[in-house]
Amino acid sequence: MLGFLIRLLPFWVREPLLIAIGSVLGIRIMYLAVTDHDLVAAGLGVVFLVFTAIRVHGVIRALRARRNPSPAASGDGAVADAGAPAQPHAQVSSQVQAQPSVAVQPQATSQTQTQTQTQVQAAPGARPGPGAPKKDHNAWGQAVAALAIFGALGAALWLAPRFAPSGDNTPQPASCPDETHEELPKAFKKKPKPVTGDELCKAVNRPYLAELLGTPGEKATTASSSNNTGPLTDGKVALPETEVGFDTYTVNVSATYNDLSIDQYVKLMKFGNESDVKTLKVSGRSAVLSSDHTMKLEINLGGDGGTGGPVQQGPLARTLSVALDHDDRGGYCEITVWSESGALPNDSALLGIAEKVLPEIPERTGR
Image (cartoon, rainbow, N blue to C red; front, side):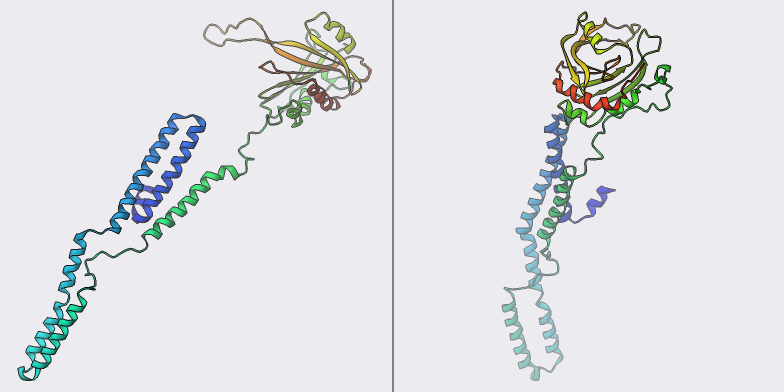
């Protein structure tokens, strides 16, 4: 249907229109092909540009033909012009025959001489006959107008993505899961009530997190939370946890409601594999910084029974453990950061996260 409508347009409107569309699409597709390194798009862009070049060649030939009309048209016009004055002779001859010869002869002779002089004077500037082609003075105007209109449309299509509001196209950061209908374990019903995984996730998954990690342009790609209990505690120790992942770093925050103080925790680190241990104070609470490797587990879901490889050593992680109360009477909040590349942010990033998260965790008072 569109092709039929285009064919109905005049030549000096249709051809500039096709040239404008072909050039805009060809240049745009070639630009995308170069930026994306796409050979298929490059071939398609070449097709549009070749199509446009053929149309431009046709328009140039038409313009040359309009400037230099063929000799046949000029000859036909001359023949028509030469035959045009024959009608007055016939009228004069008939009039002369109808009147008496003696009285009309001088008048007829004078009229014949007058007509002959008129023919001689009019011959050099004879008007074109009815079959001569009419000169179209609006061809250039139509071509320029069509190019201007569709050039403006092409420029609008080209620049629209740059000036269009990006709110609808910008990917939104991952949101925390809704756990309002999840039944909490009995350990979360103790007094004072422990924080839940959902509350931890909402405290951690905020815009400030990427800025503290040194990657302000990144958005959270994953966000999860859980309301677990500590292992080997028979479900008596609440262990809420949340994890927020970015393209560069992953942040895990948990709260352990046991009786282990930070001072005791530091003593246990001496028997473990933790390295770069550093004790400090965070918001007036006892804290310790340590490093340890994560675990890497591969699971094969193929046709060999779903077997997996052995547990391997993963990238290095940096952990900040802070007491749940100012008196360090037991329990702690852990903030762990790691990346697949093994790179770690500065310790100031963990301290900044702790200062934002700790106010969201009710301080543990007495047991």
